[in-house]
Image 1 (cartoon, rainbow, N blue to C red):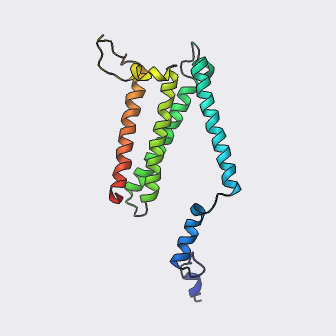
Image 2 (cartoon, rainbow, N blue to C red):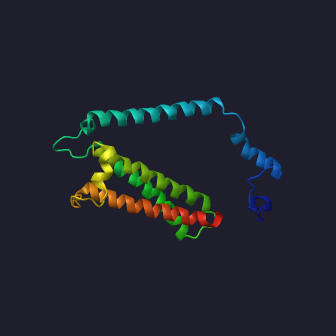
Image 3 (cartoon, rainbow, N blue to C red):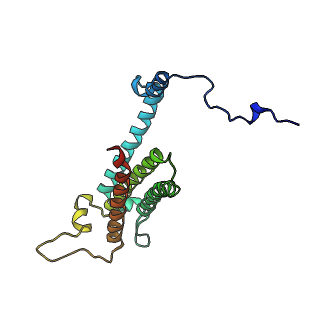
Length: 187
């Protein structure tokens, strides 16, 4: 019994011969053409969600973080859930990039850059919640970041809020350096 050679040959993903010009045109067409109705619909939905976020933050700042469900037995409520969620998203990006790096995959560059950028933006999103949790985000720098002052009064370094600032700032700095290191070959 002999095997059919056509069944053993690797299957080609390209069913027809395609020129590089046609390939470039196919790739660039979505960016160079006028946005479709689907794009405008997605833009409207995402703009609406961004508007809801801004209104929600403004409402929280005006009425206090009690609107999140914070009270005496519940110290963080909504803020800690979102903070941990965004840090988890950042860890996922770091994990994806690290696994691809450790396995020395040649095709990892694009995916690793995306994962590292995802980490950086997730850290930025996570940093919003401790700032909003202070109740007065415009004064949070004075309460959370140690800076020299004339009165000799410094932050309470035993506060978990301070730990969040130092931990996330360190994680953000390392993430930006890791992301930038991956960009160096193309700069």
